[in-house]
Amino acid sequence: MKRHNRQVALLVLIGFVMTPILAAAANRQRIECPLFIPEKDVAIPSAPPGWKALVGGPAHINRIELTMGAPEQRVVLKPQRLPKNGKWLGDQWTELKASRQPDEDGVWMSCVYGSSGNFALSRRLDDNVEQCKAIYRLDTHGHNQSVEIMCTW
Image (tube, rainbow, N blue to C red; front, side, top):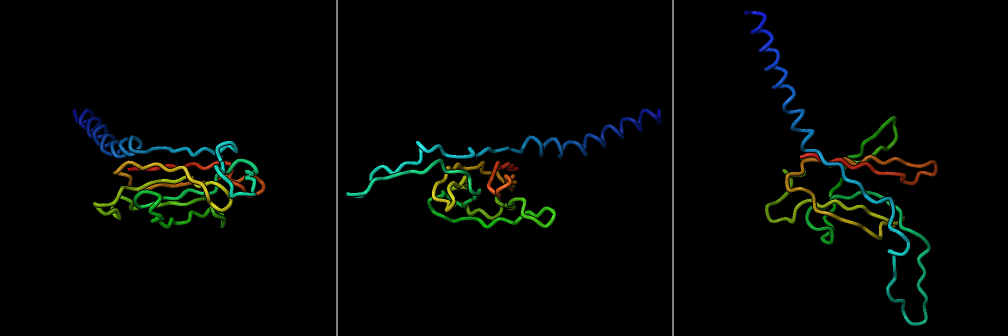
């Protein structure tokens, strides 16, 4: 009987330990930004008289930004830098839900493109988002080869 009670107690303990882990896994979202905006979609609709517009290629991903409220409001949240072996690995934004005001239009994530960050694709995140992390993988020339974005709530 004691052995059975120990086994039951162990199973209950494992359940208590695993429940937050499983819940956390259920509240995690991986977001993928397109690596580039095709040249045909980066357009200059009308050039000034006497000028001809030219787009020299696709706009590649530059960085990830999080904004408090819609992106056009430009309230960009400053990330914490994530180092790895003395080099920059990515960015992290924490306590997103706690820092949001009730009248704000939520937290938005923007995939920013072009060497100057002139283009962006943006989406509103879940209202319960608590933190996001962006890990950048660079090619041999230091350009973003991919960006892994993971948000939790």
